[in-house]
Each structure stands twice: as structure tokens, then as C-alpha cells.
Amino acid sequence: MSDESKTVMRSAKCANIIMALCELYGLSLQESTDIFYQSDTAELIEEGVADLQCRSDKYLASLIWEEYQEHKLA
Image (cartoon, rainbow, N blue to C red; front, side, top):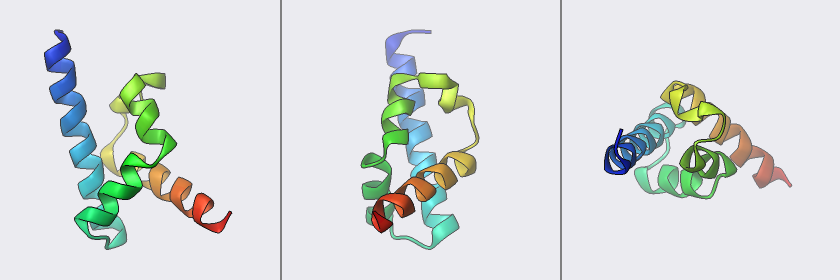
């Protein structure tokens, strides 16, 4: 798989996770985008750690939401 293909697939995955955050938690697109890109999980997905990109969008959205909630309370 070419680097360009990987980039396109990763971008689509990120967009799907952001939309899952909107749907699952009633967030605006802007809120979801901010939460996603400020998360440690997004960085791990970008780096390809632990094949996170293979997990479902809703599962990853729930991980990111939990992470966000933990940082918010800290």
C-alpha cells in the first residue's frame, strides 16, 4: 500500500471517528473535531500504534470520549 493510500485511509478513519463522537454524544462537529485532535488516542492512531485504526469507529470514539472526560475532571 502506498503512503498516499495510507494517508487517505487514515483521514477517512479520523472523519468517521469524529462523526461517531457527534452521534454518540450529541456534540457539534467543531466540538468533536477539537476533542478528537486533542486526544492522545488520535496521536496513537496517526502513528499506527497497536493497530488502533483496525478498531471500530464507535469503539475509538468511546475511548476518546473517556479520555476527554478524564482530562476534563483533572
